[in-house]
Image (cartoon, rainbow, N blue to C red):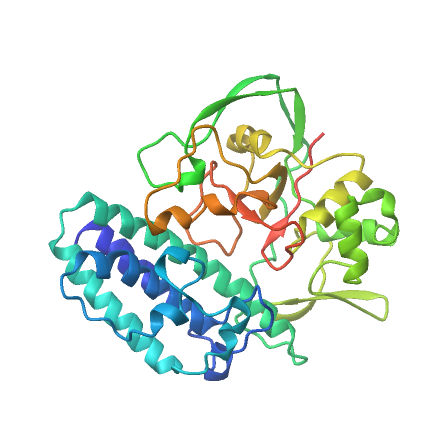
Length: 382
């Protein structure tokens, strides 16, 4: 079995393993526009391989169901019409059993393609599809957590909850001023938004070796951090007031004790554990309250080799913009990253829910500044 085929099968298997704890009723609810249902993730990641590889490269390929192109397209305008994102939860049919048959149909066809192909294009697109599915594995968990949190019984998904880590480093890392190289410059896979290695000049700065903890953030809440506008960006202050935000997502105060919903159920908040599910607005306000700031994505990348990272996606103070000489790929894959380079902020690193070997020091994740449902945290700079 060639390496790409092995990676393909391993990735496809892990997605289904993540769904093993689910009951049939868990596959379909959509609790918010941003939170897709597990059944949709299972189908969409199969749709990706079918549209990008099987249809273009297998002569007379027989689709599992012609309607799936409409049901399970995400945002690829060049590949046709699609159901509106907020309506994905209305796809009660096809049922879950049929979706697993769809995955098996795609898996079998992909195996045949990869066993006989010597095409570098097919290999590259398959590796892109593998990384795409790894992204959806984490999204499946974050979306499922949001849906479960809306259930007053606070259901348990698994024994592990992905957020019970504590820092094992402290203090500050000093970085000298200078010209540094930014961006990916290797021979392995990366996304196109990492390409275009270029130089940046950085002023001297310090960056924390540890991430902000629950206990740290509780002090911000107790200091009326959510009711004092001086800590907040104007856009963030509007978000706080319009949505009545008073604490991080999943936090609940009962009888002067703080709890939070986790994928292992409702649990009392442990002060020494690393903060999670925080928006850019909250991260920025906390940093301002501390008299510090968030690092830029360039500062983070330069410092990353001397930091322990990977427990949380870390907000940076950088807008998601193209690197110099960024080029949009031809065809549908060109819609993967470039068209989203506006009104979003960059996160760096990875989280404990990220697939193994998925992230890199150059990896550029990106979300809207109000995003809370990802496994995001705060690293301070000054």
